[in-house]
Structure formats: C-alpha cells, structure tokens
Length: 145
Ligand code: DQA
Image (tube, rainbow, N blue to C red; front, side):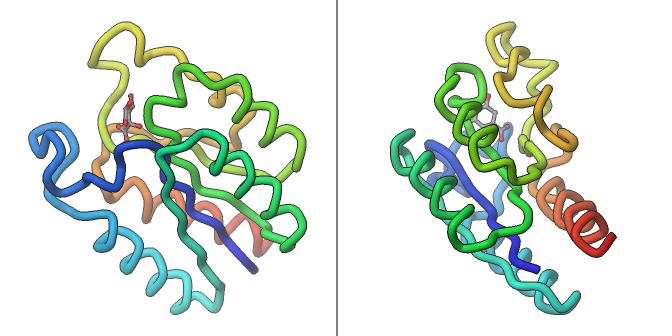
C-alpha cells in the first residue's frame, strides 16, 4: 500500500528546535527510518513537510487522486487551529493517525485541543520520534486488514 507521512509547520527544524522538547532526530532521520521500515514490510512511503497550510491541504487533496491508502500526520501548531485541514481530511476520506512528538497534554492549555483527534483512527503523542514508527506499524496493520 501507499502511505503518506505529512509534517506540518516548523518540523523542518527538528534536531535543532527545542531539543529538550522535540529530541535530537532530524526530519531526515525520521523520514529515512520510516521509508526503510515501510519498504521492509513491502509498502511504499512518501513524505512531505510544509510550513504552509495551503500546501498541506493541496497535498491531502492530491493524496486522494494518487490512491494513497493511509496518512500519518503531525500537523504541528495547525493541530490547534485548522478547521481547513480537518475539512481536507474529511473531504478525501483517507484514514489517518495524528502524531505529536511531545506530550501535548502536559504542555500549555492551548495545545490540548485538536481539530483532528476526533476524526483520526488514533493519536500518538509524547513518545518522541518513536511515535512515527509506532504509527507506521499501526498503519500497516490497518492497510493489510
Ligand atoms: C507538535 C505539538 C504542537 O503543539 C506544536 O505546535 C508542534 C509540534 C509535536 O509534535 O509535539 O509544532 O505537533
């Protein structure tokens, strides 16, 4: 199957951005680990990062046309603000898992609301970059069933 990993705003800074919160892995480290793990399981993984809400929406729309089967999505701060991303995901009707590197529930109040969690297959947060690999495992078992 084809799995799309989407990274939202500021995640291009991973590795140097607040390492005490987000760890030392770079976005490339994460994407490489995911690509290898997907390939080893016989699946195809695509990854994209954008700081622009518009580009993320367009990528989600294109995913439908490309026949993407599953999305793993860290929407960054758009998690807490974006009705438009919610509508895009509802519009394409592709199952997705929401991932956050940090435990948003032990941070500021404004991080505790998500516009996406109630329409996600599941949510993983607080487990660092390992959360993406756990999401991939879950995505693979869903697409295989
Ligand atoms: C984040 C959590 C968000 O609140 C924050 O705005 C991010 C990263 C995470 O991965 O922990 O940019 O999604």
